[in-house]
Amino acid sequence: MQAEGVIALVNTGAPDDLAPLNEIWTSILGERSRYMRDESETLERQLAAVGVRPDEVTHVIATPFQLYTTAGIPLFTNAQLCLSKKGWIHFHTTHQHPHDNRWTSISREVLVHLVTDAWDRVRLLDDEDEVLPGLRTWWAGTHHRASIAVEIDSTVGTVVASDAFFYYENVEDNIVLGINENMYEAIECYERTQRVADHVVPLYDPKVFDRYPGGVIAPALSDSSAQTSATVPSPAVSWSRVPPRRRTGGPRSS
Image (cartoon, rainbow, N blue to C red; front, side, top):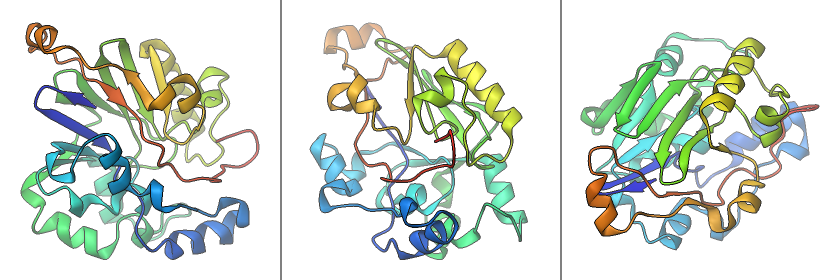
């Protein structure tokens, strides 16, 4: 998301070594869940394709806490790092969990970075929070304890993006996410998304790029109109083709 003086990024891509993720995913779901990525799909390549350097990013939002969302956090040396407070508490207080593995949520290296060098830039988000005027987050649950929805006031209406719904069908047809920790959270999240969103962005659905060619959801404002909207920025919203491929969530779901 881009507005005057702001470049906000949702998630930071998977680690160079995909083996830890794939070891767990394939042990549960088989080969269909294997994370595959080619060189063009690295985060650095995707940012470069839209003319953005990591040091220009002002805000990073991670949802949920998994290696495919948190591994690239150290790249963003100037960004405020926005993490779910509820998810952060869960990460630090849970020893055994049927869905969350500690070290495939946040690696040891990234955790050390977060609580030492980057700690002054870490922002723990409340269940209802405003990162900036026009950029809000709310706790969505459903998928993980650290799953949030990102709500953006854009030039073409309100955009809601989240991992609480993998596919458009989750929200539009009320098909509950297969990999869910609480179906009632899913129902509530989908109802709220339907109510507030003009544009829905499931974080793992390739159909985003069918509905929004090039991944651009809202064009940038011109310089003159941007000045008139300085109080409540209307970001340009674009999405890059970097989600895990072949990740599935079980029958009739993401």
